[in-house]
Amino acid sequence: MAASDTTSPAISIVVPVKDEEENLEPLINEICASLNAHFASGDSVYEIVYVDDGSTDATPELLRQLMDRVPNLRALRHRECCGQSAAIATGVEAARAPLVGMLDGDGQNDPADMPALLVHYAEESAGGPESRGDSGGAVMIVGHRAKRRDTWLKRVSSKVANAVRGSLLKDDTPDTGCGLKVFSRDAFLGLPRFNHMHRFLPALMLRAGGRVISVPVNHRPRERGASKYGLWNRVWVGIVDMFGVMWLARRVAKPDVEPLEPSPSEPKT
Image (cartoon, rainbow, N blue to C red; front, side, top):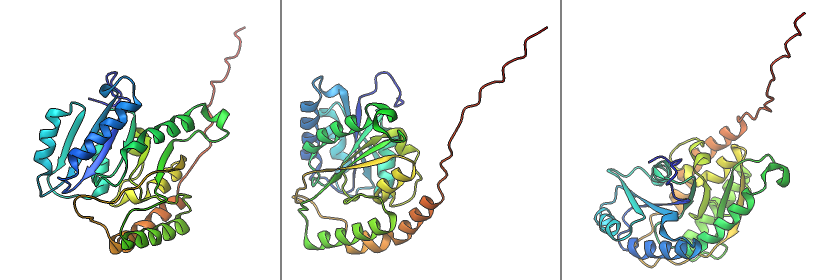
């Protein structure tokens, strides 16, 4: 079913996961509780799209079981691990809603924050460019984990990565690595694709002429499973990608388009 179908939900929540069998059911229950409270009309207003990125544990089978019990849950699977960016792209492409909410599948993002991000998105998108005084580009709402509940290594590596990225890309986003985000499906599909692109979504949105708004959100310690990120893959593996994004940003073309009107026909004599 296409995202423009009249039966499409209002929002698709995309959750990329790899080997997160212990976190599936608790997080899905929290997402449903948060969105059911936000949307008065209930489950039919939203869908949850899980993308399993080649898990080797029981994640695929548990997702199949949960889909029997949670009617608005959909799941897709990469047969082999392709990376978090590819999993996010798969989920957004499969989304049936014009609006996408995103969060990590490890349980550290709090689904209770999603309604606040949706409110900010609606406020920032309302009124049109004349009332806002800007170019009217797409909007991305990004969570800002002001109080990180991580190990010292993750906190330090995140600060280093954010400082380096912010200095080079000028994306005005204090926490681009936060998984909580809300954006237009069409806007995302118009962004360039590459491995690790999810680390640079705010910069890519700005490059496309959009706006990025950061909103404080809760952050929770990981209670189940093991982290898959550390200092090495937060900083060094993204250096080449960062310079690639800088190259893209410098070469963006933003023409001022003027519609042409047909010439008035000369009166017949």
